[in-house]
Image (cartoon, rainbow, N blue to C red; front, side, top):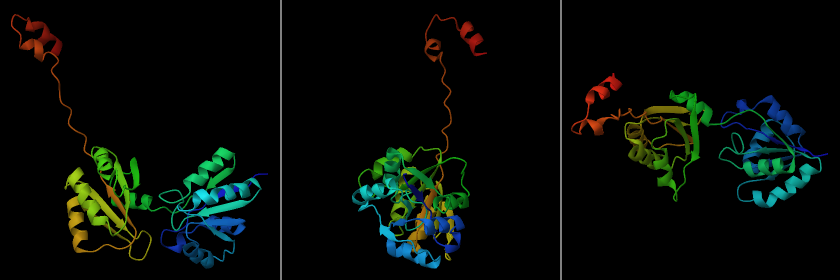
Length: 253
C-alpha cells in the first residue's frame, strides 16, 4: 500500500504561527524532508518533534527524489518542509509533488504560513485578484519580464533580498513609472515587521537612505487601464467629395 506525502508549512517568523495539526503530522511521519536540517531543527526542537530528518533542497532534489518515491511506494509517510513558509512557493517541493502525482501517490498540503498573502493584504492595494511573481530573474530575462509586466492590470507581488531591494525598486520605477503605488513589507510576523507604502520612487529613496534587513515582499499596483479611443468609422467617407452625408449623420444619431 502506497504511503503519503504531506507538504507542511512552517512559520515565516513567529513560532506561534505553527498549527497544532502541522506539529501532529510532523510527529507521526516516518521521515521529514527539510530544505536545511539545521534551520528546521530549531522548529523541531521547539515543538518536541523527534522524527528523523533528511536534507532535500534545490541542489540535491533530483538525486534524492527516486529514493523518496521508493519509500512512499513502500508505504512510508513523509513530510516535506522548507526553511519557512509553504514548500514549493519559491522553495523546493514542486518536483516531488509532480512526481508523486505521476506515480499515483497521495499528496496533501496543509494550510499555513506564507509570506505573500499577509504582505498583499497589509499593502492596502487591490487584492481580490493578483499575480505572484516570486523572485525576478537576476540577470537573463529580467528586463524582458519587467517589460511584460509593465501593462499588467493586476496587483503584482515580488520576493526580494535586502541586498537587491533598492536596485529592484529603481528598475520597477524606470519601467512602470516613478509614481506607481507600491508597498515594501519586511520581516513578516517577526518582532521588527514593518510596512512602507508610497510610490516606487519614494520607496527607492527611503531604502537608499535606510538600509533594509530581513526577508522582503514588494507589492506593486497594477497599471491603470488606458482610456478607450473612439474611432470614427465614417471618417474616410466624410473626407470624400460627392458623398451623401445625411445617411452617415442618421447612422451616428
